[in-house]
Image 1 (cartoon, rainbow over the protein chains, first blue to last red):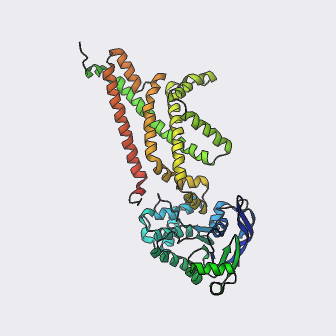
Image 2: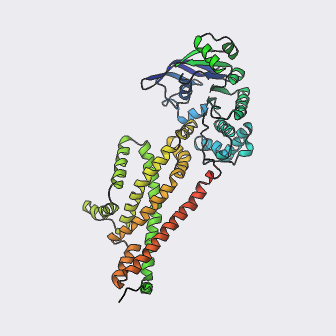
Image 3: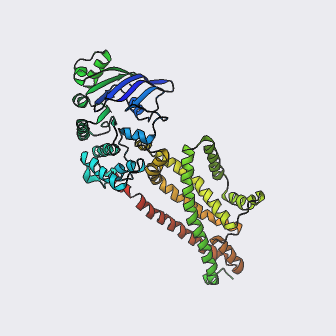
Length: 242
Length: 225
């Protein structure tokens, strides 16, 4: 079943055309890794998927519902799409528990007791239930990013977007975050990740999408794509990053 | 006959001094709260409201920051009755001080808000919060924390500037001093005394702000910067 459908999406910043007609469909439970050089449009595509950037033309649907301000409220959007950022973006003045509980209470209007129960569950899932009352500044980068994942999970989205979630981490902390994502993938969560972790893309993704100059240049199962790239651009990219 | 200091000459006027001090303290406490609250609204609207609202608020902020406080006060107390709006002296003082503190603080807060990372607002949006919800729950406290020292100073400046309200017959600390020295001609003693009182008020204010800040911004302790 197709969960996310991107149909001929264009996006320009002024004169700079960043997305030149993207077509992509992601099935329920699928893990899609988007790779490509910086400036190829991968982050912009991801940000269009939760409307942090509004696309200029084309259509994006999630669970058959059109994703634009007219047809989907911010609340509804957040119940469909969760996002984890490169720079964590935890709320520094709120404890880990408060970070996780805030949106379900404020946006969904759920009861505090119910939300706290969910918060404990999602924090358990990312292995941080003992940090419930800590402030973000007291955590390592890897722990902060895991809290950010838990915070997104607490809204129970249908699809999670991960924008280079390990790029701001010290190398020894990357593994703990990737392991959490692996668990989510194994549990059937639909994931779309922009990543520079090629080994992770190869091991965990069902499909790898290579973006080049605002277009999807090549896509396929990770095994084939990395072993036998068809285009010169992907060959060059792979030899540069591996 | 050389000059002699005699503070005992002030003794019969203790009740006037207390009355003036009370007025100054109440004026300061109330206008600090209303001024900062209004500043939050102005800072938010200047970033998010309709263009014509932003324009109007920008005009208010610049007008207030580029004209003397005493002229603003006179305008409200002596000028507005010309339009049929009559306000008593103490109310005029409250309004003038609130508007003055709010204009400066809104600019200070604006800096704090724009320095609070864009990423925080995006995280709020990604979680489905409206802009207003994001400001309220996500942006406001860190923005306040960032510019808190400047807000303390601004509030103290307005407290000290409140001495001017004696000019429209508000019985504040300065009015009390003027009143006393016109009776006993001991201007040195009385002005020295209220100078010390203003100094203590300023210290007290700074200290209270710090105590509040320590509680509200407790999350910053242990933060590595």
